[in-house]
Amino acid sequence: MLQPSEYTYNGKSNQPVSNPNTFTPVKTVSAPVEQATIGRSLVIKGELSGAEALYIDGRIEGKITLPDNRVTIGRNGSVQANIIAREVVVMGKVSGNIDCSDRVDIRSEGSVTGDVSTVRISVEDGAVLKGGIEVRSSERKQQNQSQAKAAETPKAELAKAATAHA
Image (tube, rainbow, N blue to C red; front, side, top):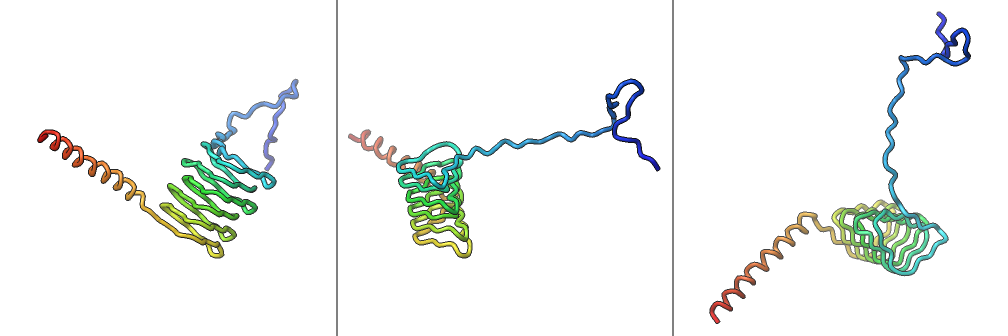
């Protein structure tokens, strides 16, 4: 059986007649992830801070502070710095301490020399990790804050009592 062609031409015009039964899906576009990249040939010495994700394929010496974002050290990346971030992924070399509020992921080709403090950690087979590891719970951080407030309250009451007796 013959199928109608995609374009049906009316008598006088060469313009195609639109088909009212065609379905055009709605395009969903996700927001692009803002990520800064330090290329292979770049060398940075000093403090690095900001409010976006960072991919390092070059060399950094100093301090990296991105407390609400992810730091990724690429396969060619070399970092001699202390890192403070929400999440750290290591595929290259890191020499320095890592302090993460969420997760540290050391891939099979990655190497870390230094202390790691985090809530979650993943170390793949073949990865190198030389240093101490502190895995803290997110609940413990909240408990420590409430204990500190509770400890301050009796001290304030004792101070008031001491001044009342004097």
